[in-house]
Length: 89
Image 1 (tube, rainbow, N blue to C red):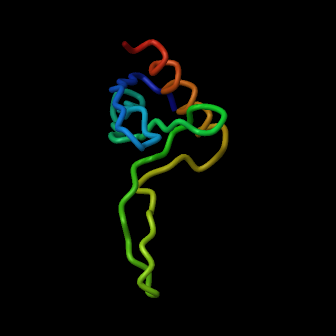
Image 2 (cartoon, rainbow, N blue to C red):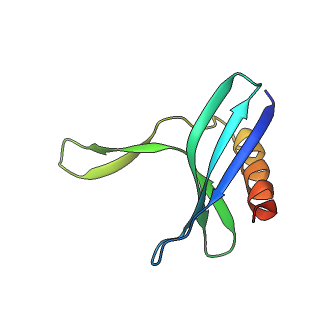
């Protein structure tokens, strides 16, 4: 697997830790939209696309729509996205 394209849109909103969104293409044939770039306490990190779901107990939770299955793949995504974020104006 190879990340073949990363697009970043910087966006800030008062009171939010979201700093932007990324769009990642894998192997020139698979696209993932709406990866959030979030400002953590110590560094930027990414959050994969998710949707709200209501549990049986009525509690609202968020469930990833897609996500890396191992830490190496997550690091690959995070490094590519954060590098592109740092280059963006």
